[in-house]
Image (cartoon, rainbow, N blue to C red; front, side, top):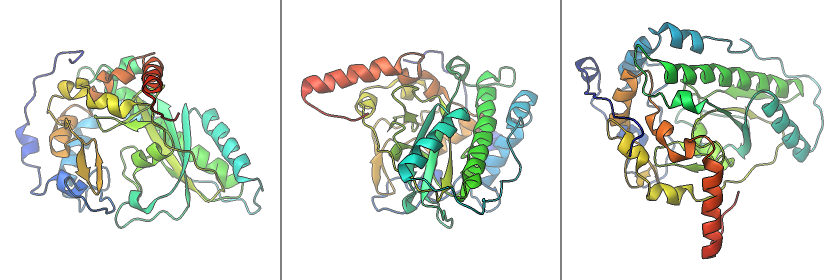
Length: 332
């Protein structure tokens, strides 16, 4: 059951007038069993996007809040990237992997993982030239996230998200500059409020950040779902991490906390086919209007049992012990 009463809400006429004829779920590939590359639906230049007017509606409200605007516009790091050093520092892929993970944590990220770039993650019409992605995750303050949804009078959760959008933007730029100073190319890919060229969520799953939850976000075995993603792409020689399986997927099958807590009823109870993969999926057309009216949302992440402070590790260990008793295996 939800940990707070669901707010009363209905789709306002201002948004109804902006909804395009084409469904965002259709653009996302809901129901498609054939593999294809993703298309940008939201978080890009609104010109030419079917849902661009809806995105404009969100931004107008979002930046009308002085608190959110100040947090979002805080120190975003260097405006320009450092030049790539003319002479490369030579190390083995294993040595560079250890070094870049250390540097990522020095820059404030609690999580870091590495994966090779896959074409299936790159948006249609976009390219990523570098072969590697270094994914970073910055953990948010769960009690502040748990204040979702935000309102004009109470923007605590939205401000917490905005703070971390600024932090993750800065950290990805600084990490890219560190790599470039070693003589390798690197492009920051903050992935917040901008789709960019590549989907970071499937890349983070491949890099060992956790499992996809019913709420459409990653569940990490220590930090739950209250974190923000960013990445850099680079040609620095690295070693890939592996995906992990600790039982969150099975847990989500039998858990309805997030779906019960979702005001617009946007969370599917069963996995859906999306561009050739069967996975958990959140209804874009139901989620976005509510999201737009509440400076973002985050109720599903805030109420997820895995996100409660101090719970994830114990829950993951419990699931692992259960698997051992049943003779099943997973990986951390």
